[in-house]
Image (tube, rainbow, N blue to C red; front, side, top):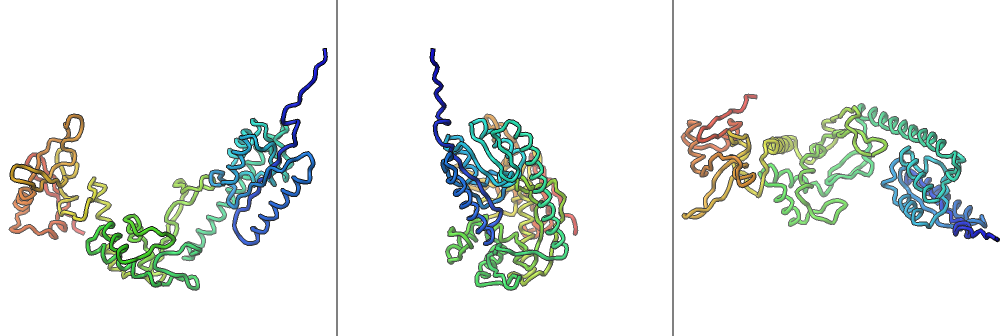
Length: 402
């Protein structure tokens, strides 16, 4: 009996070899190195008669997190699809500085018959003894990345304590950067308009619509102004001439997301540069924003253009929820009324049972409780912190004196 061995397809063809390279920044000197890496690998692969060139995959971003490296992920996808047999990488740190990523991707590729060769360390995952060494060296690369991250954070902290910061390319609407200083430019009128309208009582949406109507333009966006952008402008201390450094927790060096477990200090620089708005306007706007925040914490959410004086002031004495303004229809037509937000909610409408108040009735009852001859809206906002209503009983809580 004669037995003829038929070689697998992988043995009957050339080994398809690809390369992966990466640089961490887009500086001109590294761009040159980037091109050199690509050319070097292509020449090396084509020079081997047993190899077939399968391409060079190259990213110009950090090697810590693979989720943001498009070329790396495309290479993995092609390898799993059977388009690559072997991958060349300069070093483990180029492949990934994350131990978990380095191990998992190397094992995944090996399970699909794809080997990875790390030139600097001389590790070839085609060899059975390579995975332990890969894990050890990947851990060293990750620790090196952690050390670099800590040194960078230390440098930032030292500069912040001295009141120094780098503007970089982080341009801001209404300002230009000249000799390292922020200087108001021709768009400063947009910022003044936002604050003027907000202090005058307009909502975010109203302000955005008016700016778009007036032809105001946003930076780096073809879209018009929207409510969320107006809120960001109103909370940016840069426009009053101040600067807040390290507002959020430093990023985790692996996830690249703010890590609240890291202890950090915030540094506030007053009168750092020329402001676009005056401090009185800024403080008025912040006081309004603070009131909005308190209302939201109480369960009151603004809707539409008007904001009635009772919003955020009148609450249900039975369940603690805020009273809401409603439009009700009866035989005589439509009228405004106030009731607990939870009234009628739940299965079969069995929510809070606190009664509904006509608006005039509620105002009259409050007026009698306050002992005023006429209802003064400004005085009501200034003096009354909270009104609790339960089955016709009213409890008034006055504002604490400053």
